[in-house]
Image (cartoon, rainbow, N blue to C red):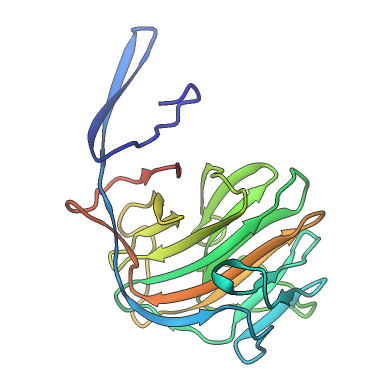
Length: 257
């Protein structure tokens, strides 16, 4: 445990953490670290940006408009630059929706060159009924699920619709990193960064109606810097699963590294 109270998981197995207040009161919590298993679900969609901005696959929004560089990203791909510099930012919505059957995982490379300024964040979302207003802006709405990493203040937010949010410590963001937002069949929400479990909700945290489909939303603000989204992949199921036993009913958090 760090001086600030963060628990860093260094290996598998259980550990009991006890906190006391001047010997007056004490409480204990047992945490169990389980291995993360990488499955091979059906790949529903992949975007490398090598062909530029494909209008049949993406709907841009915001002011100024985002743009694409066809090379210079990870895995030999290009990258998508949000280019938004205001309170609503800019981004792109997938033109197609993806069905939720046995889970759904959207994974994207991100390079977040935050410098502590205002209007700098990175957003990866799954939206049920996305809409744009007459000015081409995108707004959070009930039913959205998204991971937002904000440079000012330095936090990670998990939105389950407006205004429900879970605020977590900011992970390392230097250079290209792989971010995944995942929905499990039991209603869990998971955040995976560089193939490590960063956070997982309790079951039934996300109430998903039968036959639900989701659109992918890449949206950020990048005033004074350049926030990039690299290769995007959508999987029809959970790509990352807890191994070594049944998932805990309590939320878990593991800062990468």
